[in-house]
Length: 125
Image (tube, rainbow, N blue to C red; front, side):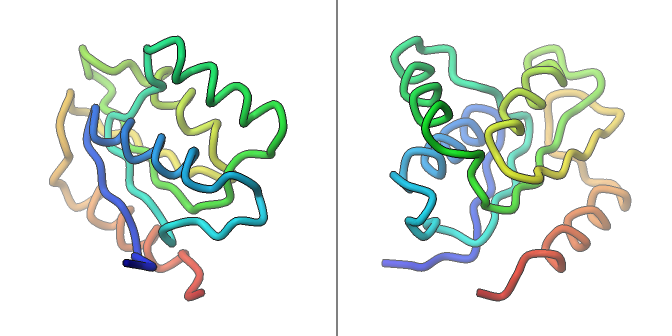
């Protein structure tokens, strides 16, 4: 029933998680359903009708104020960094973490440190 601390999504799951966040709060005054999200290899949806919904929201409301960490691989052949940046732009103050790998969830110390730092920065509502 919530509230929940956060969402973690990878690739299409990251896109779905972002859509959930963006469309679950109908107004800026509505409380977000989670405190934060980590979106790995996320991208804007390709479906025109869903994009229209997001554009309609963006034309009326500011970027969503849910802390987000967006993760992109520099050699990702499926989701270019530009696609992850485009999704990140839908959120207020997104954090972007780039890793040297491809289409996957990084496991190195740098990524783990970035996650710890990001989670420590999320307000305790």
